[in-house]
Image (tube, rainbow, N blue to C red):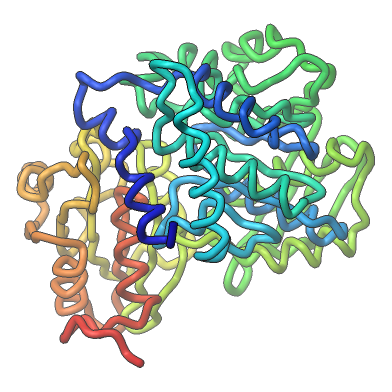
Length: 443
């Protein structure tokens, strides 16, 4: 198949967006992906893996682990989700997305295997993408895989991986319709990636959740605040300057070209996980070089200067609170700002807008993210008005950007947030060099 045919075949499979948009559809089951990788001769076992889960910060942490491993001289496969602009971003080698030809080839191989699966084992969209990543990494081959969980952990398609290191960034309420109503339920699902004999790097510091992870019997548990910590975390030009203490070493004056105090927590979890992978501390010059090379698209990413346009895929209340705090600290609370917000159903528009400090914005522009689960823009705008905001509902992310940029002065800030789907569409328009006035791309 060519790439168009391969993606059309992939899209005929159930995906999480449809699962959550239609309650009649069934959630993923681990036996489906297990049967598929069995037919593939278990490609997920061909290299050691670092497995990453958590409510927020998973992708940033996975990218940081990958960067550290690359700077140690390894060829690294990375699987992340969701993608921002192109599906290729989900499968990377040395943080370079898979090419169109290779993606079409690996999906074609899966299409040929699918008829061999047993009755009732038709894989989902995400399960096929995870299997595609495992197959691609095995065929390259890579020296190590960094695998980000899609949702939860215990029943996630990625949990066929037997990670030598598991990283859990944090636990907050999100996807409660599938993971359970409390943080304890969610912790229990995410703890499912911890394999007996592995090393667990636990960024969540709530003592009430500690025993949930201990029950999974990791051989070693490194706990944030006890075994590792960010000792200093200050703003620098274009990012943060941090001092880090890990179980094996101290690293001072590390520059992270990322915005947001929380990115230091993501990076140190990645650093500790990488130390666990090698069984020893890393050379300070390698840590410094890897940190300086890190990027995390769509996470407090500055894409335009006048006005300042910041993209942040905050998708839940905890993420929105971190986003708002970072904007206040790093971009100036006194700066007038415009919010562009597009969120998914299942998220409380009231709680999200309050977490984003929407009442302090000059204008809130709402839009539907490009997803079957899009929350209607007029409903979100109505909630914004109930908070005393001036709000405008639009029909698309592109239209919302046009309204926001027309409203904002050169010295103002436009924050695009609410969903990674919203941010991805905005990034295509802004970073992809689309002319917002004409809708045409520059050549």
